[in-house]
Amino acid sequence: ADKEPEQLIYDCVGVSNHMGSLGGGHYTACGRSSQDGQWYKFNDSHTSRMDASGVSSGDAYLIFYVRRDLVPAVFDDPKDN
Image (cartoon, rainbow, N blue to C red; front, top):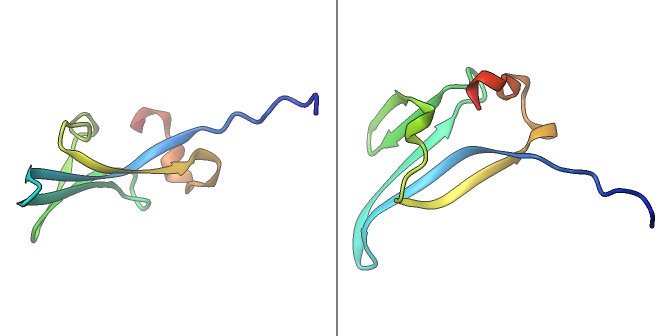
């Protein structure tokens, strides 16, 4: 009961974006590769590498996190956070 709770850290690894209205619109996604640690944008049939600074936007619909102590080693590189 007197034990300090463990502080868990979560890293963003994906974002689903929606542009438009409730009745229609367009979805895109950004995801961080567990293979190379780079961010990629997925837009219909197009995939392209993107800078991490472009991941955060006002169009975010769903955000995906992974607990840091459970991620592959490639995500642990602090220069990519």
